[in-house]
Length: 370
Length: 151
Picture 1 (tube, helix red, strand yellow):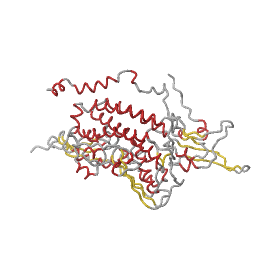
Picture 2 (tube, rainbow over the protein chains, first blue to last red; picture 1 turned 90 degrees about the horizontal axis):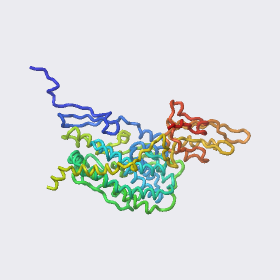
Picture 3 (tube, helix red, strand yellow; picture 1 turned 120 degrees about the vertical axis):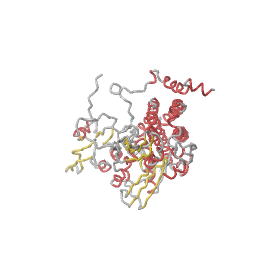
Picture 4 (cartoon, each protein chain N blue to C red; picture 1 turned 180 degrees about the vertical axis):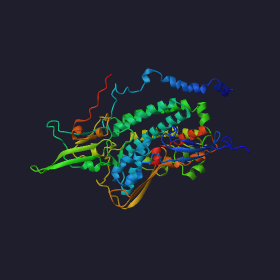
């Protein structure tokens, strides 16, 4: 009897990462392969763990605000909004109307910026090199607005508990309106580059299908859920920060595959422009900061607030024990929970599809590991 | 038939290429030639910290109240002061600011009651050593002095 050689084994275990360009961060996927076919995938995370939740227990409520920006650094403004809303709920106060309108404008701009990063890098993973340059060119315009408004481009620290720190600068409305006018044409350009492209369709259609039931079972939210045909958006379901005043549609897909997610996100960018246009036209006058004590000492209790971040449902759970520091801060990061569905999505596909699937979830590893 | 024609003549790919070639004109260049060309920086940019002095007398504006050190999430500001026996007021002696741990959140700037501590538009604060990132009072008042680029 001949000895067994490696040629006999049909299964191959392959480590993809941690140093692999496709996940945009450090994360390892252990793939079980039969030739080109994926039999299973297991995600190993924790390479970017910084203990943000634990840091929160050792900082005062205001001091923790800059740290939340560093979880999902591509959508820092949304993170700041979620945390501020949670502490405001704990304090039982509400930001003034002017602050709420500005918050909506900035978070929607940030949604566009986040989706642009996703679109550019996702296309780059698939092999389309051109869109990334165009996407980052438009994103630069958004970041300029952030820089002019609050002084930082990426980790903005734009919002404070109870409202805003900075008043709008001169020419804010004009700059945002000019961006909106310019941007819709650019979205059509991305569509021209990608939507009809046969390689793009071939790589995305029917890849990584996740049905509505599977999405609900995994707790997957955001564009992934909407691409499966579920009309679920926290902005509509549980409106926060005055989102009920604005008119917009929830784009949905039908098949729940990677191509549908691409279409949903592009449509979301258009809807964001629609919200921004409505909000800029009617920014109410008034104070930008609510009545917040210098030392924030919320009453004993807990508060959970979830918002619709660009990547899905972003939740903040803050527990107070009456001291100036939170007793516990727990984050429900959308990327972390969406990442759990990777195994389901890649099973039975090809190795090259794994890259497409990881790209389509739009994960940010800073948020997954926290 | 129409679909066959479109497939053979690569209509979808040519449509994409049209967008690419539309941006070939030099007027569409958006790259900044950084060291040669100074970038535009927002007025509120949070960059290198500065301890402001009174421009006429050269005395520091800081009243050594220690509020910035308390506001800082990273505890990287150390304010040294001593009480002047004649005026019975606290006077600033030393001020240390560790930029290596700073995340430029601007909380110290917001906390300052006299606008003495300020985050400025200077962004060229790289140094060759870790010690160089710990700024003392003199450095904070004078600001960073980056080597100008010759081109």
